[in-house]
Image 1: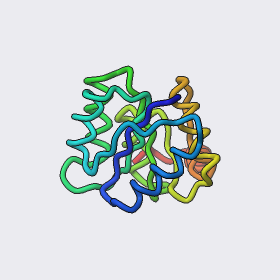
Image 2: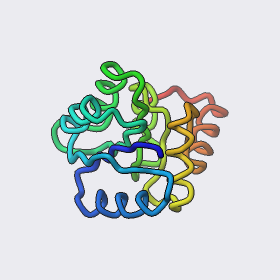
Image 3: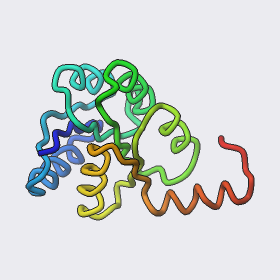
Length: 144
């Protein structure tokens, strides 16, 4: 079983993710954090395999929390789950140490596969985001 900590400031999103992941049969949700500070504290306490991290939250945002988690608990992987498909958030998330970047409109199978892959040490980038990253690189645009 992969151990996952969910971090999102929207309660209904957290509850939905808990239900989806719990039904997967391969993932155990070990905790829920509603802001970045809680995520960092719970990552240290619960030692999940993966933190499923939203980006925009009040207080410590997902970028800052990801950076802190990766610095303090390098064995804990972070998979970003967000609505932001391409802007400075993508680059900032990767720079902060995120192992993957997934969009919230992804099908449940992609979510489960991304978590399992991330826990196994692989990187995952949502296909929609990957296409935009490739186009950005092809054009020679600087990273935001």
